[in-house]
Amino acid sequence: MRRILLLGGVTEALAIARTLGPAHIYSLAGVGRVPTDLRCQVRVGGYGGADGLASFIRTEGIGLLIDATHPYAAQISANAVAAARAAGIECWALRRPAWHPQAGDDWREFDDWPALIRALAPFKRPLFTLGREPLHYLDDIPPEQFWTLRALESCPGNERCEVIGARGPFALEDERALFQRRRIDVLISKNSGSAATEPKLQVARELAIPVLVLKRPTLPAVDQSFSSLAGLMVALQGT
Image (tube, rainbow, N blue to C red):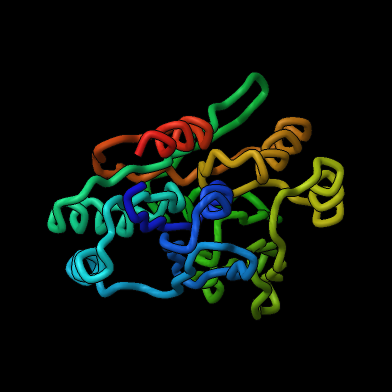
């Protein structure tokens, strides 16, 4: 098997890493917990852009780059493709299928943050479930709103926003309790496609609560793209 550099981020990346031996490298940006029970090497931190990543690939003798980062990590994915091309190796990607609205859903998609923030105006109790980016807007929260922000790690909010540190998977009953306890009237989410965080969408559907969705970025073409972990693992067996 070619020496693999696995760029992680999504849950499936860890499943891939658990199959890799000591010759391979699992690379993490440093957000969230770092696994300590893997046979493969674990690297934490950035590379200094595409050029730095390409240099690392050459120095380490990497033969295959696998991008298993979050669907919204567009810059990392672009760097991966550029670095693989510069180093003369293949770049594969695991790209989760997006969620799609179901009967009873009230989804409203937005291209960027300013448009999404403007769309929040009619609501009082939003729940943000898309990372730490809302923290940049805490000083702009209207007096009639109270925000609940759920992120991987707890961090300070302010008098108009509470930040909850929590990691999926999230149980349906727990999500129902959260919406009820916080009196949530709108959900803000990325379209991650993750089964671990999908229950929040069911609760929003049950309660007829609108979902403001930040659209997925366009990602670059790769040598092979996989929509499922199983498909990628079968392909790896042939390398």
